[in-house]
Length: 262
Image 1 (cartoon, rainbow, N blue to C red):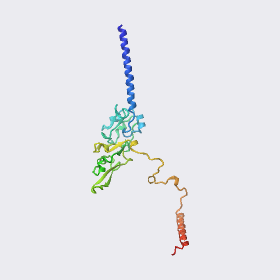
Image 2 (image 1 turned 30 degrees about the horizontal axis):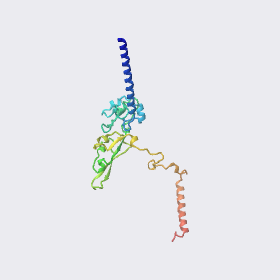
Image 3 (image 1 turned 120 degrees about the vertical axis):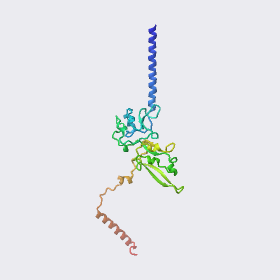
């Protein structure tokens, strides 16, 4: 009888463990599914495009360990984003632009470009999201974000504009240059407002995309091919002859009308 009871208890425990494993696995699977996307996540310098980055990163945490400023952290259960993936929050600890980029150099899979130069990195883009709150747009002098920028006068400049309301002061408006900004987040971190008026956003959220049908001639310095004159270029003598003929034709017309010598 004791053996039968013992055997029954054994199978009951096995059933309990199995049930707990199934339920736990289902719950964990649900957590993983629900934590897949975070459109606002900022990745370490040299990160591949988001989809490729998530597919390549093995969540080893070596980049987090290599960062001397503790900027990077791995996404935890309950946080937005895929669990175990490195990211940083600019308002808390920005990227301090290490010249040797130790986080990228430590990546074993290539999810981070190990050859990246820090000034070429594009972690995100600084965006002045609230001019109404930014005190520089209220006529109060503030250059904190500008002065903190590691690429000052390149990634971030100041537009000085007269203050018409008082006639005495000027606006010191920060202007971000997307072709240079690395998205390090130092500007956001030092903003003096309770909620930063300038923030780092991933490029897909921060920038639009110009249609391929648009041609910016003043940048390309070329003519639109559909309207390009396909005739051979004329020589200097031919152009001079053409100009003389046009002049003679104009003089003849005036002479015919009797106005040339009136």
